Length: 351
Ligand SMILES: Nc1nc2c(ncn2[C@@H]2O[C@H](COP(=O)(O)OP(=O)(O)O)[C@@H](O)[C@H]2O)c(=O)[nH]1
Ligand SMILES: [Mg+2]
Image (tube, rainbow, N blue to C red; front, side, top):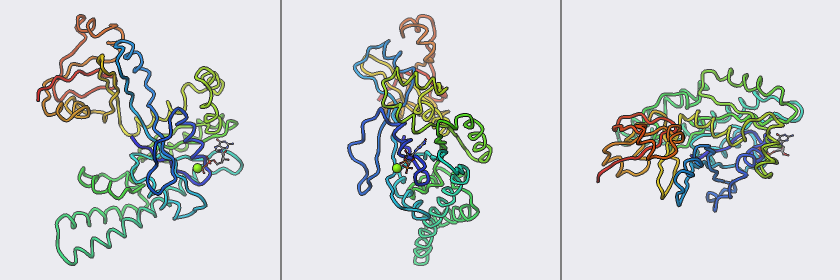
């Protein structure tokens, strides 16, 4: 999963990026032509290590999440959103950082301003493409172009009414078509309130305001103390934990962020286990066993026979797969079984 960090100039994007990705190595290369920084982090999951302890595998593979921090200097207004649009084209979701530090803060105002700029930048892309498609249709009638024209018109209408595209219901085909345009308002947003430490007493109320103001939207809001959490990220694990406790935080910034983004995007995790590899896989909530098999390998989905399933907690409590099997904790499920978060799956297949 690829997350683009957006936010008004100097709201703390880079600070938040550092707080979230301190444990990561910088990516080998960033995208051609951009100076933006991309880093890949492991998604924290407290279940993975206990599973690894049961199997002592050659390899342990966590889920990963990548972040891109846009490097944009001296750009404001519509051009700022346009540059963001280019840099965030491939992002699956956006982390919208809102600065809540210093004097004269207007978090909701800043947030709405950038979202309005995003609508305009999207509208410019849609109108340009619409012009092109309409011109082509003047020369020849093509069913695919007609469909695209219709889709673009509904996008134009929504954007003009200040409705972000993520609130529209698209078919899978339309979604695919739109993805190619990389429109920012079509991407889910996770709001990161980047607070100064001394604003801690206001954090909950402020997050509440954001949730309320966007009640008709799919929204997740987290609070992060960017400055200190990025410094904390330099500490060793134990020192960081104590520091965190002092701040009244139960979890690291990355823990909070990944949890909220899985919720926002409707994702969950299942595991596969063997002496060779213990691994976390990410699937949409509600995906069935055959789809889960397909995430591992298309052959497994095609030749799917059955899945052997045990919830993580049961396997943990049993102490080993063999004991779990003896105790009758292992279930046999078919193609259409909706996989649950934390399921440990063994896919039987035949190709
Ligand atoms: N006091 C305080 N300053 C912050 C915080 N986050 C960022 N800053 C400062 O704000 C300035 C801009 O931050 P930066 O992360 O570079 O913003 P960007 O332009 O969005 O990437 C820097 O001087 C940061 O040190 C914060 O949580 N508290
Ligand atoms: Mg920056």
